[in-house]
Image (tube, rainbow, N blue to C red; front, top):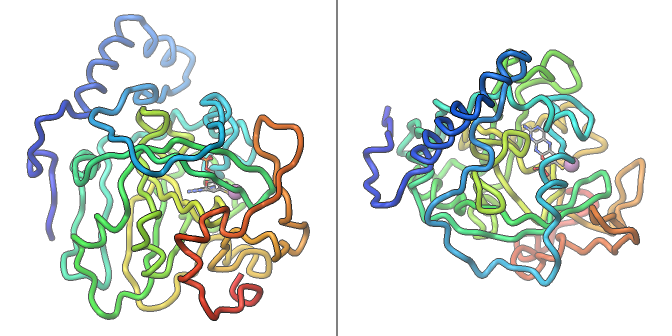
Length: 312
Ligand SMILES: Nc1nc2c(c(=O)[nH]1)N[C@H]1C(S)=C(S)[C@@H](COP(=O)(O)O)O[C@H]1N2
Ligand SMILES: [Mo]
């Protein structure tokens, strides 16, 4: 098995880990870590650390970004509780170093990437994406990351690789919400190979130019902006290439409500509510939801000839 460590990929840039050490030293000096320990509350030691060498990209929007505060305190991350504020309050117990992402299944080059090697795999870009939750709210988030196809190309998928499965960490000591049975853990999501290869599909490692806060899926998460938010699996430890369509955590839980594709589509209602409109977090009036969340030019061709009511 191929194990990639940070030193395998040379870089003249300051690594995020060096920032991490600086910040940790700073926080120790301030007594912040000690105060957290005394209260029995774990701190997210990476949040707020600036990512080095982030490039601008062509992925911008003429819409205001949702404030950092909302992006990081209004979250869905059931591994830390089902309330919107739970992830921000509880995700400090997630340890994002050391961290590895396993590449498995129908690939010529299976292996395990150390997270700090992944951070240097491809240039980091800022991409401002519209995000739409199936619950009817949306945000505009300036992610930092690199396209998933950078990983896929290096993995050398075989001809049998038709789908990609994403698996979140499964550890109830770090993820207290996993003690509840709201979902059958670990959280699993999936994409068809061509969806995974699409240039829009991002592996995010940061937001607002900084290391991803734990509640947003640190240290690395998927971001698929033309699909409902739940497709964008957080805190990923495994990427598996498979022949058959993966059974996702939400399909397992409620198959009539959550299909495999889950493309944002104002014409296909959720069985319990309409998807025609959405509330942009921070705004008062609802907006019309856009087909493919406004990314039709880039992705509509992936679904040509498919009945999107049937393949919801
Ligand atoms: N592992 C995991 N990933 C997850 C979820 C989750 O509960 N667990 N929630 C999903 C849902 S429903 C949404 S809307 C987005 C929210 O991402 P954000 O909190 O960064 O905005 O994460 C998705 N990824
Ligand atoms: Mo969601």
